[in-house]
Image (cartoon, rainbow, N blue to C red; front, top):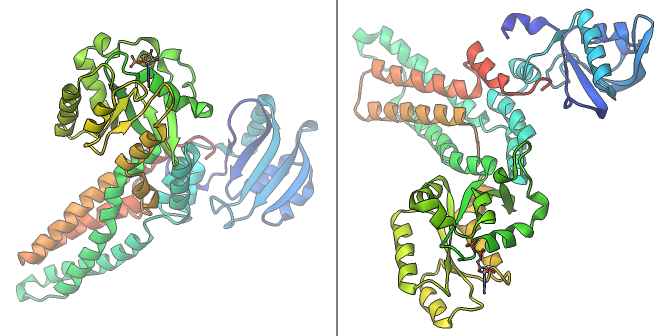
Length: 457
Ligand code: GDP
């Protein structure tokens, strides 16, 4: 994809491929209306007002291909800011292919992945982070992921930063000017004002960087593992938690039962239970897996539900394990199972650790407490109230590096370094921030970003 063919009128199927009641074919570009009119029987298309619908047939020569409804969006009031025509036809693969081929024979070009969104970006509809949010919106799997992607697409989190960056450009050019007068030792840029500006930018991007981990939790879910000695009640617990939510236990398409991933949602956040197939099939997970494998599993997890058998296990041993996990700084929830059968003294003793949750997996008692603790451990309340959350590692990398450059500017100011050093770090920060928003970009970066989109988006 290169900028030269920005002039082309592009076409692609915008709905999922496969048989469906209706499919939507999207055409964008200066010739969208003209080309579609050539094959569409309703002659009103050429004069149609923006956001109007027209009914008619698509013909190739005299052969009717389909009866369709066409929506017209005139530039700049469309997604791409160009003229856009959307043809809603019947969802047969034959019809879809045929219509696209006819349109191509009249001068359209088949769109590349993400090209519609790329055009929207290049035509200034939104900044790059907002364009990237379109892809997140389409793949959002949970309530919160959806809200965040939608907010990011509609409002973006870059507006303030882009404004601050503009002011910073002014300071940077003043400092560049100082370099031209280096002999004369003049200062065009007020150092105190520059410092205040840099500090304001740092304050704006720090919470964004901090929110990245939370953003990923929202996007990808929390990897959770259930560990415990054989017969502690791991599979009983898993079943009890999962069965409450049967509707969302879904096999990953195309895999065998072994890879069934079990997920639950707590307040819109997804917890993914790792390696649960073993739990379902044998009761001796720890022994058959060996200590090493258990350790690996615990390392991969972001949250460990450590279940103790209060009937079988000695209190001292339980306390030892809890201590070990605490020392390793793992996020874990100690769970005492089988309270329906164990001696009340054990519960009394362990209660001293206020993190302990006591349950009977068999009788489904205490499960709500586990969920409460899961929320608490993963700080779900903060995640939900986090206004500035992004999930994209490209943004994370650029923000982290720009923070570093900005801090270097501060150090240079503190240590009264010369203008050339200030200019160097400022340039760095400016270009990194510009790369996040897409104010500075190149074809390769754009290609990378948009090629992960689907065709038609
Ligand atoms: P796993 O090996 O850790 O997966 O343990 P299981 O879930 O297979 O449970 C082992 C045995 O403990 C089974 O016979 C369960 O019915 C029993 N069990 C599990 N939870 C409880 C509980 O809360 N109370 C009692 N009394 N028995 C339980």
